Image 1 (tube, one colour):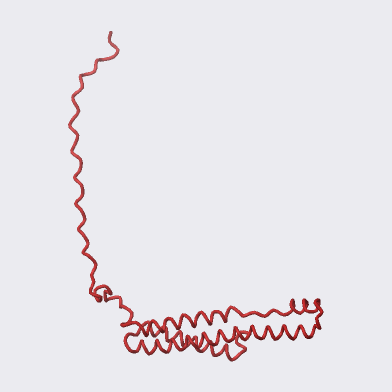
Image 2 (cartoon, rainbow, N blue to C red):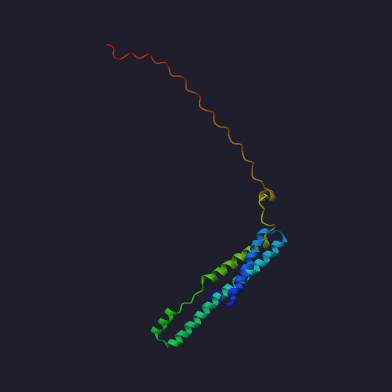
Length: 165
């Protein structure tokens, strides 16, 4: 099926526009981000609806084909089994990807609308903006003193020479 239907072209166009909106959302703050968030949310809903309707349509068409095949076979089980082996109908990976992408776009749009301020910039400390600062780091402890030197060993008596009787 692929790009043979108008639904596929619609979902591709909406997904591309949604991707552009999502990338623009990363750079925007304030009311502009809320407007783009609303656009992203609408795009997400469109993708979800089109994807779910296409999945349901495939299941309906599969039922119609099964009914027609049963009538054509006239109740002959061998013919029905042969038709079942020849015809495989399933929703493709792409339709499920459309639905998942729509959900992600919808959630991202909602997050952009709900956020009070834009994403924190790298220069601004998010904790300081919220009125909280982390505790000051403690100074490292002084290194332990080295151990005291050992006292010199007691002198040993001179050794007696070996070899003399």
